[in-house]
Image (cartoon, rainbow, N blue to C red; front, side, top):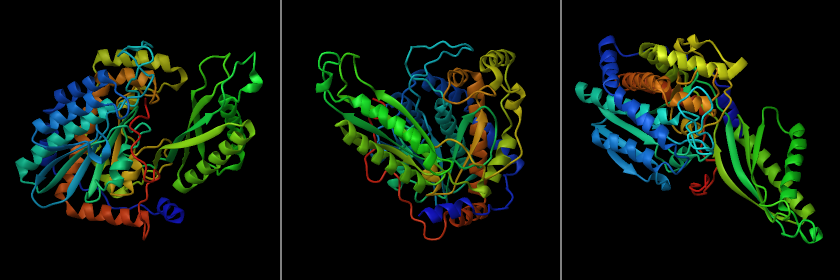
Length: 479
């Protein structure tokens, strides 16, 4: 499998130029999205206020499902064993199946008011630091607009909106991919909030994560420390051992960890401790190998400290597989959709956020620029869209919904996602996705070329085998 993946990463991208819709059809789609702009904004801000973490997004999921049902979609809830996951479908005769992804989970600990200074709404609560409130609302708005355009022009085919919870470490799309929900799709379209606009089709890293749980013997830390066996000691020694291991793992591997439980009181020898580890690399096979070495480290330390250890796999995602054919269509769609235009009040808000960023701040004009198209860049993060992209040709874009220079997973990102800066970017994303879907419905040759590139990049004989194996969705991973 590793050879197939590396061959795909090195494959030459297609040089096929994009073929966007004509002016009249494009204008019709844009008008359909603009007619939904108030609904996109309302849904995005409601979900921003809900701020529900992975697999607990009951209000957010229900809101989006209701919008789709009201628009005439057939909605199937609780798919692939996940209560907040759903698939909404509109069928209009025989034709290609084109899907859109919608995310809506928040991040723990990032509660923030829509203000340009640090001001949690509820200290320690969740917040939309990755803008998934915008993601889900825009995708649903785009889907409803596409349906309207299809009906007005007698366009044949099937449109699907995939409601995908728990992107932040829960891997819902992996379980949906494993369940075959994308198998018959011709292509899948997605987007992501960012501090800039781009249709670049870059790689993202494969990622595997899990929790190491050490169990020891509690005792009085002063009166009888010899009677105790510290689970926290074992966990801390593991952290040190992994630091030394970094010298002897392949280049490009990234390892992150946190301590989720280190005991309850200093005068009690902890009998339980837990750490949460991530391993990333462009090659999922390397990710697997490094994780196995971490398991050996944990087992050896458990022996040395006379504790016990177990490991629970939490998530595993593939690297994102670019598709240049689709990327060029998306780039043309983004340019036709335009970029967000801020009011003077929003610009003043952005300046306030920029001051908090210090040297990381970028010129505000970045939010109204679209760089030259590119494909095959290294990427940096990880996403469960990666698994989808190895099952079906997939394309995405980024739209400026944060103040330039803002890092995702920050309070500044939460703040912007709850304002017009965020929602205006969401409307632009909805336009670009809807235009891309329209172009693909209208041109079977584009879909065929995208499929040919997809097959070449995956490599002959590729079979998708998820990194999570046969485990069930970790519905409690945020509890």
